[in-house]
Image (cartoon, rainbow, N blue to C red; front, side, top):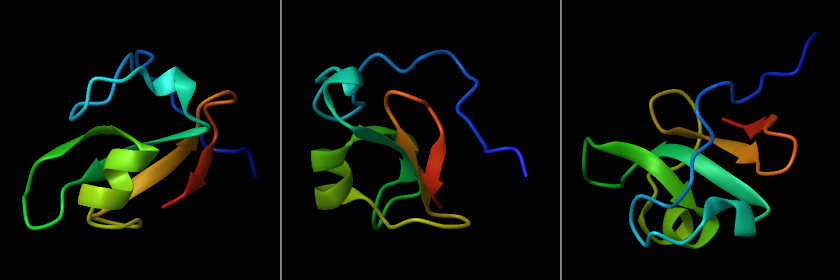
Amino acid sequence: MKPKKWYGTWPAQCDLCARPLETFPTFYDARLADDPRWGLFCADCWQRYGAGLGTGLGQEYDSLSREKLRG
């Protein structure tokens, strides 16, 4: 099976802290905990504010290969 990848515009920065996502080994396309909003997050912000991984929660991507790792 072909790996799933991030094919959208390369996300430049975390939607919460504005740090460049390329400086982290992974980034997250995820929902905030206790909030219906979604965003693109660095690993630090996702660990602090993310709702989790999986259907309806979020996905984790490798910042170098852009392959989907979990979720």
